[in-house]
Amino acid sequence: AQSVTQLGSHVSVSEGALVLLRCNYSSSVPPYLFWYVQYPNQGLQLLLKYTTGATLVKGINGFEAEFKKSETSFHLTKPSAHMSDAAEYFCAVRVARDDKIIFGKGTRLHILP
Amino acid sequence: DTAVSQTPKYLVTQMGNDKSIKCEQNLGHDTMYWYKQDSKKFLKIMFSYNNKELIINETVPNRFSPKSPDKAHLNLHINSLELGDSAVYFCASSLPTENTEAFFGQGTRLTVV
Image 1 (cartoon, each protein chain N blue to C red):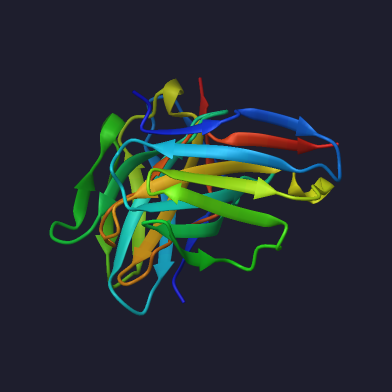
Image 2: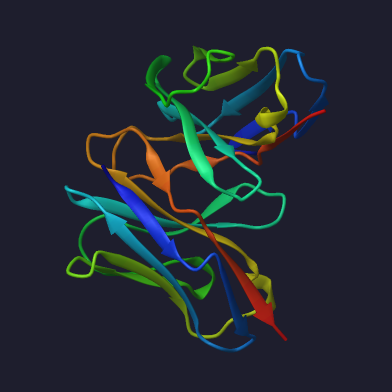
C-alpha cells in the first residue's frame, strides 16, 4: 500500500535561511506526489506537484521539490525563508488507479526572526 | 468565486445530536472527498465519490453517512455525535485522474460537547 512519511513534525529555521522539509514515499507503482500548505484556520493549498517528466518541480511562493526515485524521496525546499512561510506542510501521494490522496502527518514550519 | 465551499465553518453541538455539513464545488470535477483532520493535524480520508457514486469508504462508523445529490455536491450527515467526532472536516474535489491534485474547502470545525 502506498504511504508517505514526513521526517520531523516541527522544523524551525531562521528568516532568510534555507528551508528543507523531508518526505519519503512508499509505492509499488509510479506515484504522483504533492506538497500542500495549510495556514492557520484555513484549508489546504497546493504548493506543487510531480506527475511525470522533469524531476525538479517548481511551485508557488518560491518553493521547489525534487523527485528522486532511487531514494523514494520528494523533499521540499526554499532558498530563503520568510516569516509568511510559517505554516503546516503536507506531503501527499496519489497512485494510479486509486481514487484517494494519502497525506503524511505534516510538518509545522516555524520561522525565527 | 469560491471553488470548494463548505457550510458551516464552525459547528458546536451536544453529544447525541445529529448534524450535517454541506459541500459544493463549482470546478466541474467528478470526484469529491471528505477528509477528517484530528487535533494533531493528521488528515485521513473518509469517503470518496465519483459522479455521485461511492468509491471509497474508509471504515468510517455507520453514524457517518455521505450523500451526493449531484456531482457538484457532497454532504456529510453525522448521527448520534460523540466527543471523539470533534475534528475539522474538509471537503475536496478533483478530476478523476491520478495525476491531478485535490482542491480543498476551508474546513468545518466540529466541536462536540
